[in-house]
Image 1 (cartoon, rainbow, N blue to C red):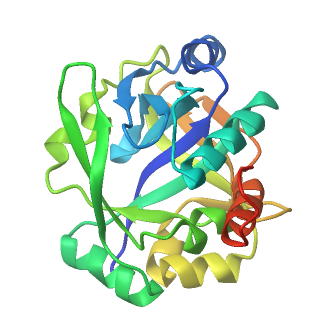
Image 2: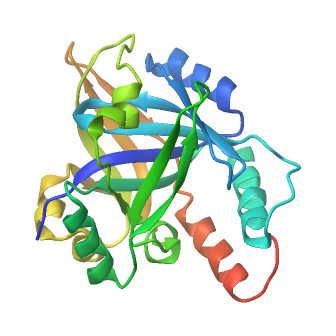
Length: 244
């Protein structure tokens, strides 16, 4: 089975710009404009990390748009969740080839999804290629999705300079909850062994990212996981419960 790399982590926040500035003041991590999604009323700023990974600092930016019921329910849930504080919404891996991404889709019973990605302030747009394409199989269970980038030259981590106030050396650890066996089955034994995982108590989902700095220190980004609430939202919406 292929080995997959870390691609990005999504940190949901209440106020995009105030939260990004708070993170800079607290950690020295600078962020850059990442863009917004036309189909989802959110926007993000990007924090580039070593190894081609990045953090999306993301918030709702359109509180009044008329949206399909499922998207409207997600917006309400996102707003209510981040009103209580920052939450890790997703963590994601990167496939090294299209064939590897297609193998993920087959193995997990999903599909390769191609969709419009972020629209950036400079007028450029991105295309998202991901698998298995069903949040119920991944994010709602606190597990990663997979992305494929045909060229890394336009990868968000490359477009966002890593000019942090404290230069970074490596991603030193990931703290995750849940069952190690379930995560190993999901990502494969080789990827599981390659990731710098630390398991903590509680439900599945990302809880923290540790960053080693070049001066020998460490920056810890910790927040609760949004996965349990996302699972409740998905179950409610699937059951016809309407908006969150």
